[in-house]
Image (cartoon, helix red, strand yellow):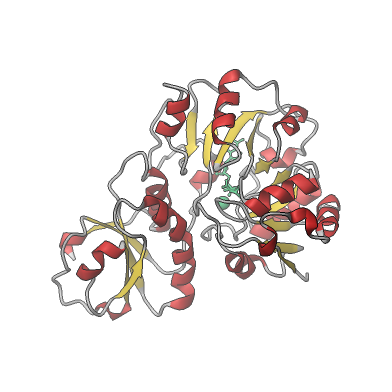
Length: 347
Ligand code: TXA
Ligand code: MG
């Protein structure tokens, strides 16, 4: 299949002036798949009402079909076709965080969306992205778009056009280039099918941010690794590059062993550069250990580059001390590292 490329980076302000929108819309209407930029990661979009489109999404990604998809909308009115009246609590949260990097799992009213989108569950995850191009696209095509991250299943999520192209060129109808995703980690997924709500997947909208809007509304802290995950997708090995990675805790001093470091990368904050062994590859993760936003933004790009750009055998990645802000990145890094943790002072 020939994958068409739309470079829409110059239309951030006004996508209506681009005359190819009808082509994109008609591909979606015919059940085709197009990867679109969002502020979290790129999504592989298909018409959420069209069973064939959804089947193709699972196929293109090589994704287990019991793993439900997030439906992307551009206005609250679209929800009326497939969920019940929103409670005032949920409206409050949507007003506070949408458009933006949080998905809400709501009770599903069946009949409008195709069954495969929700993987047979009675609930549906929805999100209104804020990405300047992604948002305008959703407005102009005005179709509820189911979109998982636009990567092959098990690979790191894509935060640039190149990442999508690498994984999905030839497997989908097209890719919209909308520059690098600002956030860099997938959205927070908040399960609102019972109260208090539960965080099914941590993201940059944290428990304390949600509770600042709606006190005591979130029931549990999200564990980094759960045997019985709430979001089915959390149980699969995820986000992994081919290069083996270990989480590096307590990295405060230069390693003392005389290991051959030339095939090892250290993915650590700029502030820790001086204690990286001289022969090792230093890959800056962010400015310092408080720069979580920077680390979120860079993580997947680094994981993608590890396999392609570096001649290394394995990599260490910096462990942030765990708090509300770092839960999301530690969750992704633990998965990428397959839960492998080493102590910096033992190297
Ligand atoms: O930031 C994001 O959320 C990106 C962009 C493209 O919007 N999308 C994304 O989708 O990460 P995906 O399919 O890779 O991850 C969706 C997660 C999965 O872990 C899935 O199991 C969970 O949300 N999920 C979706 N619907 C659910 C439901 N009804 N109940 C429980 N978990 C659900
Ligand atoms: Mg994904």
